[in-house]
Image (cartoon, rainbow, N blue to C red; front, side):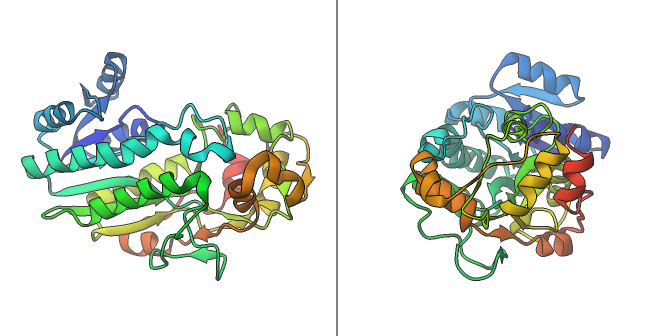
Length: 315
């Protein structure tokens, strides 16, 4: 197949390119800069310079690639500071990529007759409803209101999911990835979050009862290849088998990174520092189930649990 990856130089896109070329696909990948185009070429694909927020630039790139499948991996996550009180501000560019860039890509895809459209979404914790059991499936609705700090980010996620799964004439697939970890990510032995955990600057708040779902970056890439090649249209959670509360995974992670034991703070003391949304991330959020993806995509994560991944897959 001819496959166009929008965002081919990102943490996930750069892993997709070699996997797809090795599988015999003809791959085209976009970057915003000429250096990125050259990097895509070096991976054995065809690089294209594209401004994802410019409809004409997107159309030109998709027309050049003439793909059977478009893969939307556009985000702007490399410059996040971790400020939970300013979540929407932190994700402002990613939100534009999930709204404006999604619309540009879908319009171009319809014009050239793209058969399948695979897009990145999120399912690691905060988008899930915070009532009921600790683990949610794709059948469970997303949260109605995550709090004022993240309302725009939720709107953007709902937009990309709705636009892709309802696009006429296109098989729309949405992948709700869990929290990435592994080489090249913020959570790695050399990444910013890994350093925060190692230095005990990532505390357990209010008992650490918030449930998070994780996925190793290589497992996320393998699941994406599966979604490109097979599976019915729809939404899939791409997470490992082991959703777990912060109070369980954070001390273990600190130990594996050779760091200090994490501090423990009561919610009332943490709230002025991280806001209501931050306290929710630590205490009330819910994880996600991967049963549908394993069943319908024929995919199984190599790192079935963050326990193994944090121990052997951090890079």
